Length: 69
Image (tube, rainbow, N blue to C red; front, side, top):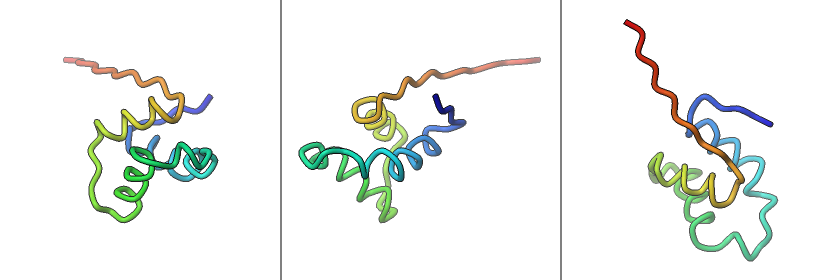
């Protein structure tokens, strides 16, 4: 198990470690456009990163918001 502080940090790890291992039939459509947009700094939203991580990376994403007065 691996934990990340941010969606961007998790996505960067996914791009470097999971994306290269995807079978060729999965490297079409959403994952390849996300890889291109991220790698070439064309812009990718956190929402899109989150969707890719869940769909193509077996990630479980939980949000924690804490208020401490």
